[in-house]
Length: 411
Ligand code: TXA
Ligand code: MG
Image (cartoon, rainbow, N blue to C red; front, side, top):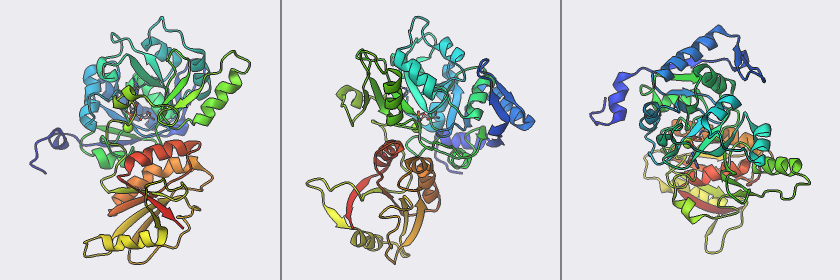
């Protein structure tokens, strides 16, 4: 036990972490009552234990379809504050509130707020699911600790049966950031959460690996121009949002544009603010250095490019280790680097991210890959770029933030 005095070390002695299995297949939601039926007695018991823990104001880690979340009662500031201490999260970074029903949504947004037509369409198509929407926030309902004192609150309805049932059984909205320690890659399996928080967290619900693998898309549709601003690309793709709005608003006087922050617009004020997801703080970085390898983008003017075989071979000389350097390599299976013959003299740890043609698979595997290679104790992780379309936009958003170094390769 370390002598270092910090909340982490003090809390380590206090708690033993229970991992409770939940069977998603045993949970079914009724579309009218918006309530779950749970046929597995063990799953029901696990959810009830977790709900009691939440009402005792303790955080609980639970699976969502995107990544594992660290949940606490959203309408209770003491409970919410424990999310910040457990994660080591800066207090100026607001949290997403998760609801299990439209009834619950209506109970926490201002009664005089009229849902924009765009929100009605997006909710019909993507809720429950990996889409977070900003709403005006009433500070008398949503504690300012959740919104970091901003005028909006981010809300989503998760589609993972365990997440949605946990909220329904707790009968209260849950605030939940991704369950990683602040700055680390988001967990997509219960074992990732356990490794990160063992002894510091009472309960982890284990619902198996997450399907989507990257976090929700955060959307602001509250601006006066009616356009949809994507603050963070995520599990629901920009292509799908645009397609659905175009189709449903066909013939309308004005079809809103879907604008991706930093790709389609810049906002100086927003870029300084922690409310712009992932702008201000370090994100998605394992404890190992990460290098992003560009293998398809042209080398920008002023940047040096390297021959792939020469660059990879130089890694073996980089190390002052008395053993061969261990290098983790995250690539699509059939990409130029995925099929490349790697040089000797390096202990390669490959982790494949699915076919180039299927960015949804890459998204699903990305954080698992980073966390698996970190667990294998590699000295360096290389990630190959993928094309920024569909889920690839969210993948590259995360990879750029995880990487401390970028290299342009030629073949
Ligand atoms: O998929 C997800 O969204 C996961 C699961 C657990 O639901 N949650 C998640 O939470 O990714 P977190 O805290 O890791 O990321 C939420 C992002 C943050 O970058 C935060 O800045 C942004 O959403 N956010 C929260 N409230 C906001 C607000 N009122 N305005 C703008 N951005 C906000
Ligand atoms: Mg996060």
